[in-house]
Length: 108
Image 1 (cartoon, rainbow, N blue to C red):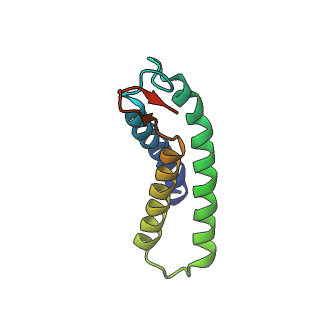
Image 2: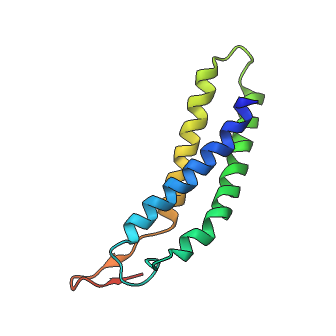
C-alpha cells in the first residue's frame, strides 16, 4: 500500500512547492498575482494537485507494468520522485513570471 500512496503524497508536495516557487517570482509585482490572499494561486492548487495525482498514478501503473518484479524498489522510488520533480517544475514555470520594466513596474 505504501507504494501507491506515494504518488498522491508527492503530488501534494509538488503542488505546494510549485505554488511557492511561482509565488516567489511574482512577489515583487505590484499587480497581477501578488494579491494579499494569493487567490489566483490558491484557486489553481486543487486542479494542479488532481492533475499531478492522475499523472503520477499513471506513471506508477506504467512502472509496475513495464518493470519486472525483480526490479529494486529504490529504482521505482527514484523514478517516481524524478517524475514528481519534473511535474513540479512544469507547473511552476507554467504559472509564468512577470516582465520587469526598467522603471521597476511589471507587466504580464
